[in-house]
Image (cartoon, rainbow, N blue to C red; front, side):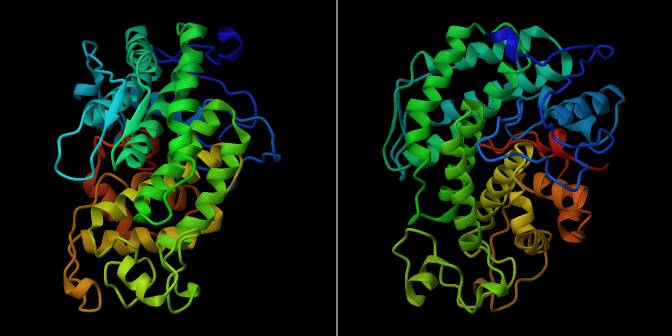
Length: 406
């Protein structure tokens, strides 16, 4: 069963090229992301693998860039390979119950789970770049440790924690399952069962009344898990969630004088909307629901939005096309102020918290790289921050996988 799923075919001095079957990702190797239309996918059609966040052509492009010592990919690779997540003596620490309180009370397993999931993804990427089986074996070891043990997530941050970890687990499993023959079928199936029973039921419903970064990262995890499990119903749920939540999080003037209210929430009056948007009463293109909270949480949502659209793109669904103007406005708005532009008095009382994470590379890759849209502020910020590394939550190594130009 495992061998029939594998797409590994050849070698590339010493890096290996993967050749995809199916619709592919439509990306040229010289940039890592150069296409203008998502590959078509009929409703209910077969999923493309590997196709969770990173596609076959991207993996080939990364190997080529690193082998040729090209920037910014070489620096991004070196940063990843020197991180604690890349160590071959990395030891997972799995928990049966992950307890993540929303306050200052100590939790149990929260940091360990997120870091182990990122480590599994990191090791899977390293395997695909270096062809050193020790990295694939380490990825399997980490994933098996958790699928053998975890049963539940508890306390007030359970939904967010499950989404953060679930997003990375699905990326790691996808890369490992479809490029490596050494993961025993029984353990693969056990890991899939973990995703289906422990993670998917928590993230799939979303969290309409919470801040939007929750809802969007839960949709991100739902999308990733759905593709990995070949679950069309969950995939369609994530698509719907994206279509309803992104317009309710990032404002465009075409929405009217007030932002769109989150679907299914009790936020149904202007007063409630103003409160929900952290007291903001003036709305301009690109503003997010959490901008006046801090840029960090708005940045999480920029990342999650781009992640969902990227995975859908690999599956032939062009969610980017539905939100490209909104996403560009949000990226440009936050990048401008992150770079130091003075906040006007109408924006958060003239005070903003500039603490964006490594969250711009994927959106820039599509809008600038594939669609040739102009994003000068985002491009400037992204180049300044490269190589974008990891936030130790759910974002990792996106300059390596998605950069479009040096």
